[in-house]
Image 1 (spheres, rainbow, N blue to C red):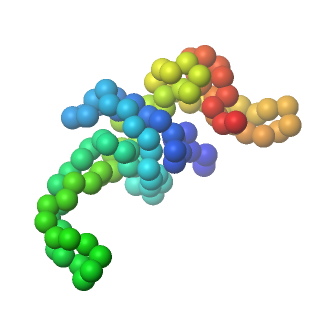
Image 2: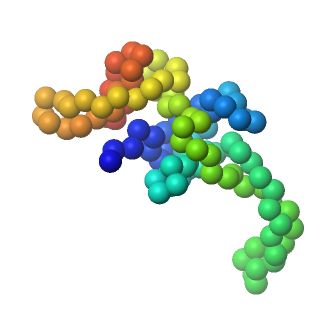
Length: 106
């Protein structure tokens, strides 16, 4: 199944403690229907020191958020929008903005 939200997309959070924030999708987790967005849903975790690699202490990192709580921000019109699919003349399937009708995938 084609994904409406992909890695590298700019999204806006629609609900929750970070409502209204925008950020870039870092990771998509299709099996859980979740995404990780840069700067959104920050949690604190206690980290044990790891050999020479990591320092111990309390670290902050992004936690996954349900994909239904985010909306894609259209690159052309700049609004949070729903995503649709259509086929181009050459038969390629692309995503498009439901508000302005512009193709999102270039």
